[in-house]
Image (tube, one colour):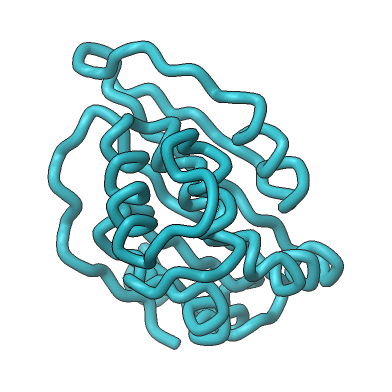
Length: 179
């Protein structure tokens, strides 16, 4: 699979991306399993571009897959585990509620800032936990990358629930500070 670039993400104080590295998996399989389109990807064994003229073409030694994470890119379908998580986070939604009310709660949580977006995204990834475990068991790794603009980003807290989900899913988090 050839590396590809999607349209540039608009400048925001915090940008999130999910990165998967694996010794051999097809990048398209990652996209299908996670329901996300990569911004950049290549498969182990694909030819790498050479830097100097006349150099011998090398091959990528691992699959690399990177996708931007934004609520706008998520499908509108609501999984039962996701509904339960929303209901737990929103005290106003105790008891039986409609799908419309849950979607409204989802929009509300997204609007709360980066903590809400992280929580929602990790809840969505929980449905793919067996796939993530497979990636790790086969020698791969999964990381959530946060690029933060120093001047424009406000403070944020990594809530215990988010940290717990990161650990349960085996996802590391990388903080990159742009100046």
